[in-house]
Amino acid sequence: MDIFSVFYYRFKKVWKAIRLYLVIAGPGLVVMIADNDAGGITTYAATGAQYGYHLIWFLLLLIPVAYYVQEMTVRLGAVTKRGHAEAIFESFGAFWGWFSLIDLMIVDWLTLVTEFVGMTAALSIFGVPAWLTVILVILLMSIIVLNGRYWTWEKIALGFCLLNLIYIPAAFMVNPSIASILGQGLIPNFPGGFNNELFFLLMANIGTTIAPWMLFFQQSSVVDKGLQEKDIKMGKLDTFIGSIITVAVAIFIVIVTGTLLNGAPIDDAATAARMLMKTNHYIGAFMAIGLFDAGLLGAICISLASSWAFGEIFGWAHSLNTKVKEAPWFYISFFITLATAGVVPLIPGAPLVLITLFVQVVAVTLLPAALVFLILLLNDKKTMGEYANSPLQNIVSTLIVVLIIILSTLYGISALFPNLFK
Amino acid sequence: MRMLKQFINKIREINQRYAKPKIEMSKGVSFSLAVLRIYLFLLVLLMIYKFITVIKVL
Image (cartoon, rainbow over all chains, first blue to last red; front, top):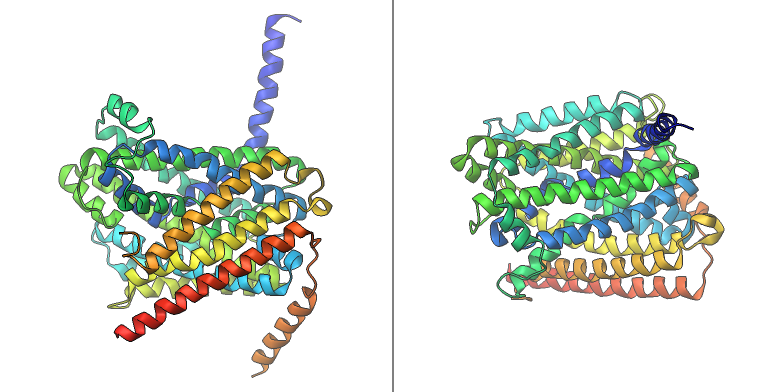
């Protein structure tokens, strides 16, 4: 065989793999990028403003954390063809099932409220009134969901994921010092010593990386897309690429606020966007657009996570491949969740700060349970067969899960008792 | 009223369908679930304590 034939053969093989990846890619990318929701953007903006580039190394550590947890949902979904809620009901019985489902409903709804808060705050920077933002978002999401095809929904969601990368040009526009980023950011360090403030921020970063809805969303999404056992390899690659992108976006946000807002007090991403506008109008606008997009992506995934879970348990048709007539309850639950959450930021004097704190506390009750169930299910060799966790996977995932449980619990407790760790 | 009845019946049906856990209750699984119960119980106690202290202040 001559060199051209070898090259052509290899090119065809690689191209085939890329094409296969493009067909299977979706659930992992969407869930990971949607993980950078409105709350996440605020956390990263505050991290950069408070500690500059010093915590970039910590964000990099979150790549394997996010990957190892989420890839388990790919295997579980592809092998069992069941969503996470149904898997919990079936394997652990009605008590744990109802606990997870009701908890998920509360956490999702509260998180959805925070997404609407982020979106309305972002568009208010451009003079769009909150009520108009809420109506536009509900209309937009209706159009996306009601098209009757999972495929189309996923491609539109991926389009919004692409918009999430807006922070990358923003970071280049601030002309950061590469030497400072590499020197300060890549060497593990605790700026100003390991104090309570830093600990709280680290916990917030972990809390925003793994959220309960992500487990339920990705597993249901894998099932709705119809991934099979043979697709697991590509599904895992999809999740891995997604986890790299989500952390990359977080790092670029840290670079933006770390360069321009270093030392400034940041309570939310919309404040950061307003402050950035004073320095550079375009960067501020990018920040606001990114915040809106992050809230929208979060809202798309979170509302679906709830509807899928309800559909699985109540036996309703629950696929994006079905029309409204075929799956009325699936779409009704989707719109009720969406509309009720959207109304909250419009209520004058609504306790939005309390809601944000409550999200953290309620999430702490659901996340450990969902993660423990995940590991137990992945060890059920009767169901999982060759796709059950290997001893090494068990060690890594158990360590990660224990770490997440400890830190998210401390985070939740610190939200309940703010003076406890001071 | 009819809808409520239907809903209650549906809940009953779900409870019956998932009455028995299908996972093999090995020592590891039982231990994990027991720890989870204790963890959640303590967390709920903390929340109740917080709720009572907030109510007292109000």
